[in-house]
Image 1: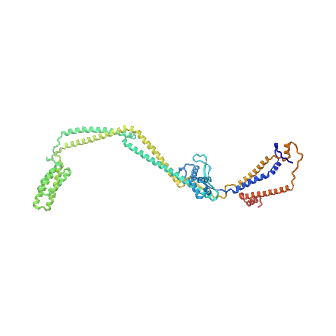
Image 2: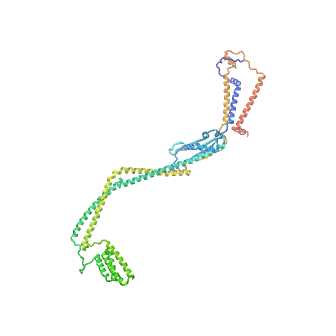
Image 3: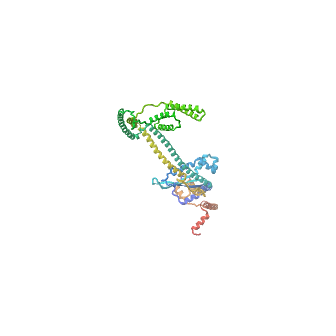
Length: 590
């Protein structure tokens, strides 16, 4: 018999399996209700949670085809850095919103949420993961981790949309990488080109300053000090030689002047027969007088007249003396007399008269020209050969002396100029050295920039021709066949475990709060007296009928649970027919 005692129970010893089994029987309704509720909840969650599909593309990072020892690329950043940079560019708000509009993503959310929330949701559904491997760094020869590939993944409830959007994102990554590398290479080339042009302009400015400085220095540059000293020494030697020659010529001039004073200049020259020999000038003067006398008696066409004319012309060419004004006046008078005589005899219209008139007019013009010219000197020329020889030597000595004096002035001027240059050189040397140092530094920088510019142009060609490091699509996004979430089996298993645990926990909690005495041992522990007798439970027909109903319900529930497990196994794990034939094959029945 059992009695409920409200008093405090004594401390219990360890319970036996029979007592646990009896407690389970008492609390089986609570346990089954809690377990079935959680199991139904987990099954509902597993079946009703909408599937999400994921499409992934794998992009390999390939090294440049041409060895870096031959052509060095201007892109020096690491692959993971470039991937992160490209990721930020691709996943910008403008780019992602274009993709959202292109594929009409998140239709329901776009109705109620702002653009920023849609973009954040889109970014959350995109995954970019790098793939690293252990490699040997070519620069340090040490083992290190290097990024060799990366994946681009997009998840969506539609497998077709997941694949399409993943394809678009992959294309954006590949295209942005090409544009980014070309842009960086072009920016490097443009920067170096601008720097080279700036340096070239700077060097031209310095060259102009140096040219102006050299013109202002007028040969007093420090680099010309040795040359100026050498030229100064040479000028001093020249000055000494010129002074010596001047002294020699002055002595000779004094000697010739003394000799010339002892000789008469006009000693006539006689022939063997004692006749005086005329020179060309005297012969020309005598011949002109003879021609004037003969012209009065003979015509112009007379052979003697023509001969004298020819001889006069030859002597004029030899001596360089032209007819003087007096002779032209005489010829004019003769021509006028002849014209007057012929005019009375022939008449004014005769051709000879007309020709004579033209001759008179020409002679009048010649006479007028000679009258306007200054009269030549009538000084008497020396005739003594010895005098003439000494006079020529004296004139030569005087001319040489004059030339040497001019040469001495020129040498003296050059000597003073070289001395001035040497005096100015130390004063202008600091400024000149600063200009030359700046010019040399700028020229060296220009050469460095030019060499780097050539390398940058080659590297730019490398990127334009797609020969540098590039992204290669080795695994394009495929159409997902199975959702990657939710994991329905895991949810079901977790729900089963949670249902069992929570059901037992609920039963244990209710049992621990029940203070009823249900066994003789509990009565003994409480009263410290043995009970007189233990009367077992005697079920009647109603109890037996109720027990049968419960058994049938338990059997039905067991069959239902088994059917549910088989359905879940068929849907989420493996079809039952495949499992059946696989089992038969393994046990050797087929």
